[in-house]
Amino acid sequence: MKSVTTFNFTLRVKVRALLFAVFLCVASLPVLAQHDMSNMPGMSKPKAKSKSKATTRKKRKATRKKQTAKRHDMGNMAGMKMPGMKMPVTHQRKPTSGMRKAPAQKSPANKNQMGNMPGMNLPAQSSPSPKRSAVPQPSPQQMQMNMPGMQMPQASPSTSPQTQMNMPGMQMPTASPNPPAASEQQMNMPMPMASPSPGEMGGMKGMENMPGMGSMNMGPLMVMTGNDMGIRVGSSDTNIMSMGAMGSGTTWQPSSGPMHMYHKVAGDWLLMFHYNLVVALNREGGPRGVTKAESVNWFMPMAYHKLGKGTVQLRGMFSFEPFTFPPGGSPLLFQTGETYKGQPLIDKQHPHDLFMELSAQYTLPLGERGTWFTYFGYPGEPALGPVAFMHRMSASENPSATLSHHLQDSTHISFGVLTTGFTYRWLKLEGSIFNGREPDENRYDFDSHRWNSRSARLSIMPNSNWTMQVSYGFLRSPEGQEPDTDVRRATASVQYNKPLNRGNWASAFIWGRNHTSSPGEVRNLNGYTFESTVNFLDKNYLYTRLELVDKNELLRPTDRALLGITDDHPSFRIGAYTFGGARDIWNTKTISLAVGSDLTFYSKPAILDQLYGANPVSWKLFFRIRPGKMDMSDMHGGH
Picture 1 (cartoon, rainbow, N blue to C red):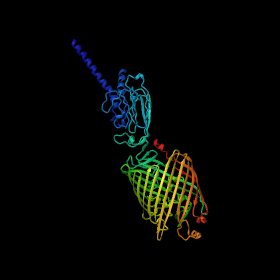
Picture 2 (cartoon, helix red, strand yellow):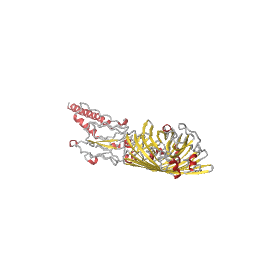
Picture 3 (cartoon, rainbow, N blue to C red):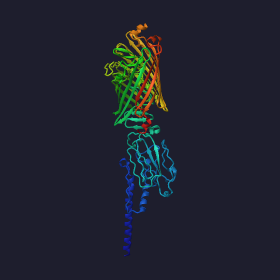
Picture 4 (cartoon, rainbow, N blue to C red):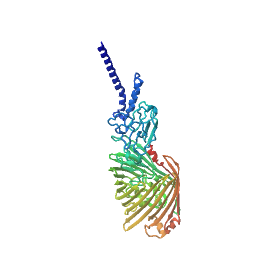
């Protein structure tokens, strides 16, 4: 009987031990499942299941202790390694594969080790509560990383004091029922928004290469770097075309200047729109001067798209000047070039064509620093001369054309252009074949002439504030009235831009020379232009343009007879000196309105006094509308 009693007692002890072991295994399953994040899409952590009502309070407390002890080392989780960043370790269990053992959290030196990441200075952490000192606790701080394009969910009252890093494509685990965090740390870091590659978390790619983490990828094409917007060439992360450096045609200008345009990301396309509209009262002085109301204007839509291994740019440029200029052109003393009703234009600036540019450019990356590009325009601009005057930052407020226009940049409208070239870092070499004939009097159609002209240009941009170019071109019979006359044009220019605290200062010096040759006659004409515009105190502008230019088409046959000149093309050195200012009267993020005025004084040979007067003076009063200046700080902020 005694042996039976002993056997029954032993059996009951074993059964109870077995049941207790099974209970412990079942109770630990939610805790183990809470940490298995590798097989969960987006790393979503399910909430721990609540314990059975039959479980005693003592066992629930033991389970919570086990949950607290089994925190992961976030610094070593697959796909979350960040250079120089160690995440807090909260457990004291024996380390397993992929986990580091950390000392107890009593020492402040062991809390939230963030390594050497720039811009991540954390505030001091409060010491743990004495009531919980006997229980191994994680760091009592909750850290959040707020990054552009990353919205951080707020911790719920039951969130345990653990490190949270919410990134695109990753949902953080739901916290276990522990007391709320004592405080929160926020780290504001501008982060690139490139799509994640295998093994990298979305939004973290390329961060280590960004100085000060001041760069941000905004979709597949647009990249913000410092104060400049760039267009990605193909899929390259380092081969970027600066939007600020893009002038007319394929020209470069300093990339540090302000940009006035709208932009929108539409799927895989980046769309932009730029325009400038000036309504003016134009008074030209002297006997040959008149007073006219007019409007100078142009509109430019652009689109960018990744195509194959490269990037394609589509661009249009249109002007309503054929409708908004006075008949025959805008009054401008000493200006020459092109025709009206079969007669050469004198003392007038011709209107630009309705279709100023319809072009496509395809750019391929060559390694990480170089590109090869091809540009086609009908109409378009060949690789000859500086940035066209209406696009130069140094002339951004001056509504008048330069007197040297036909010696420097008049080929910016050519009906038929093919350009190809290479860039390497700060160097660009390109060449063009094109139609060298100037547009005809019909400003609404498309001209058709042989592509029998050619040009080459070397451009240098050593930094964001400077650009330089030299170019040479051969233009076959550019003037329709003189089909036997060819022009060999050489140009050189230097452009400088300096961002100011509350403004900008842009300047340019340009030289152009036409070597004209016709049967039995050779002539050389030179044009020198200096212009500068300073924007200060946000809304104010002062500008100047100083020119010296050779003109040999100022006199009609009756004028030559009056002056007793027998040469068919007498040349005169003309000086024009413009001083003006403007002020923005209404600025928003979408539109900028300004009023302005300028005065122009002239120098000339005394023989021309009979025609122009001794000291003619011209003036303009104008009203200008254009898009608001793009705010790069808003761009970095994700707007």
